[in-house]
Length: 134
Image (cartoon, rainbow, N blue to C red; front, side, top):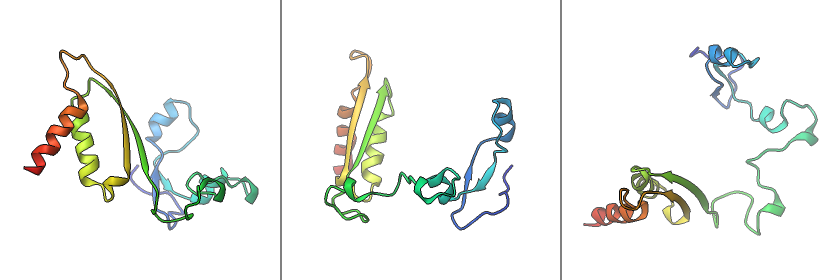
């Protein structure tokens, strides 16, 4: 299962799942590690160039006046659900302390806690960041 099927390509491989689990679930895929072909992803296997719909390629109308490549002016928006999650503050801490450009990150946390039992994600995150500064 760990070996790559023919045509590994220049773009590496992608794991398509355990072959036994896929067969049990009714999929006709052989699974395992297969060559990653961005051309296939963008066309769905079609040979017609008009079918190309690459999600990672920015189109001029969507650029809002920014360049089509590079990071200038780009923001990362992240939505994070948290249902009584004690690791939420640590996740935020790692997100911002390990980011190359932390000032370009925007996070929204949807938190569902029991106020009398659970610590608030933002409060605990602020405490952790304050400890780093001391």
